[in-house]
Image 1 (spheres, rainbow, N blue to C red):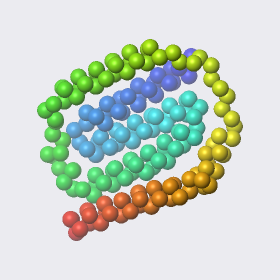
Image 2 (cartoon, rainbow, N blue to C red):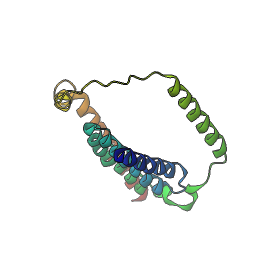
Image 3 (cartoon, one colour):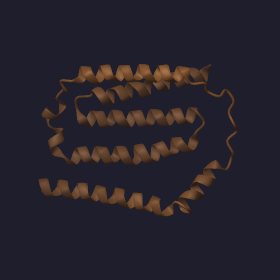
Image 4 (tube, rainbow, N blue to C red):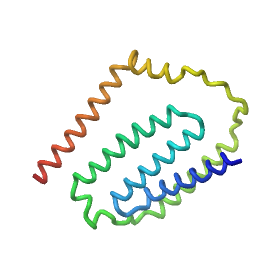
Length: 164
């Protein structure tokens, strides 16, 4: 019972942060709301006993992606002015489409028979994932890291040339 209450509270927090991300008029505030959304999802993973996904969420999304977004916003001065918070005139169409999509997904999920039993997760799953990252998938893993580094350096150089 306590775990369900905590889950519901964290889910409400995460949904509130996601809503703040979408409706915020300031781009920097939206990025901060996005960090809160990522943190809420990480806590939900912990509650669901998916520790590897929780740590991955914190390291990859909060540590890397959100930091990159915040730096990109801060380096591009044109996004920080008052004009960037303009409201889209078609917000009502997007809201209506979102409600229809949510209703369709809820109807679809109510019709799908889900299994009620769960298989036990082996204890060495995280060790297997780690060994795959440094074994079979080491080249793609390193290529992605170099690609992200080059993109970040390129963004810094472009911002520096424009304002320097």
